[in-house]
Length: 218
Length: 231
Image 1 (spheres, rainbow over the protein chains, first blue to last red):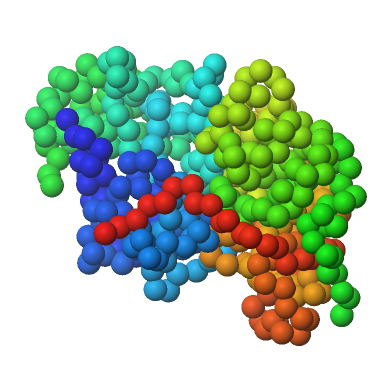
Image 2: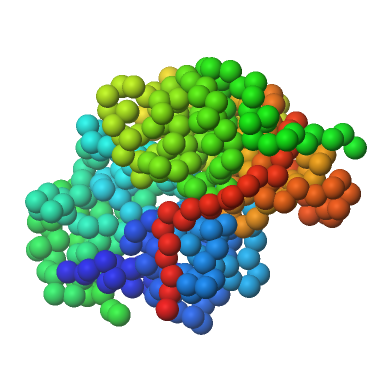
């Protein structure tokens, strides 16, 4: 099984040269640490920046420079700043190549739930609904099962959804899976030491297994 | 040029009545109108509807107005990080309308730009779509969303001139430019107020036409929510 860092490292392998990428809060933010420095990519922050740089040194901290998680950041050379309307125009307009975000549940038809747990605190969807409705390619970083062992890869989401039919690929702590347009999780890779049988048992939705499933390579 | 300078935050908010609809700029605690929030607190105006991406934290930003029960309704995209907010929401003291962030930004932009409605894919198939018109364009479904306007928009900029031209800094720009355009009365507080003619017209983010009152704020705390550093 992968830890959070492992999931982030595996997702970083999906990044290609020249991409504009939006990283969500949590595990997706960690992906930035593992993008090979040989690739030229630009990270978008929904609050109005293209070109997120590393976290600042203590003497560089600037309260006017934060990311979507309200963390202090720096800007890469060649960055651009803009308003929230412009930010979501570029998201909605399909100009961002890759969106990576977390999820509480994903259905076999690509529905994603990650913004609300009824009866518990409702914090709001932030930019997640806009991102999932428009992104060209969405990769979800998530735990395959909840703490009590219940599958989070479902036939149908039980939580209120953030978007319908939008997730294309999942990297969980157990596996890499693609979602077919007609429905179904196609198993592509296993996490180190995880068997196909374990993944079968941990996946409630329709799981499609074709041929020999390779282990992830790092 | 028209001089829009007022003496300070108290003068800027003096005619905001109870039950007014306000827009307040900012993302998290970045780019929020700190001085005007203090002035609203002091004035004690209540029953406010606040349109703002977030609701501050317990003891800063809009969180201060929540604590004193001056807010009747919040219209936001994300309201985590605030325990008092949670308490008032669960007890039914506070109304909350949650809107996808891009939809919120565009509804405010539309309000300022005279566009009564538009179609967006955000929220199709979710509970956000309830009661809204859904229409298909070129094979994809979109929701109709309406413009948002405010009685008073309160924005924060880095620099401004006496005629209301504004320049923002860093990611503190966020919702401020659209909100400046969507208020019947727009109040701008700036870190540095300069004479008209001293800002380069090429660098203006918000043209002064949208701004009715401007003043130079004091004692900006610019609190950081998540101070994150590297070694």
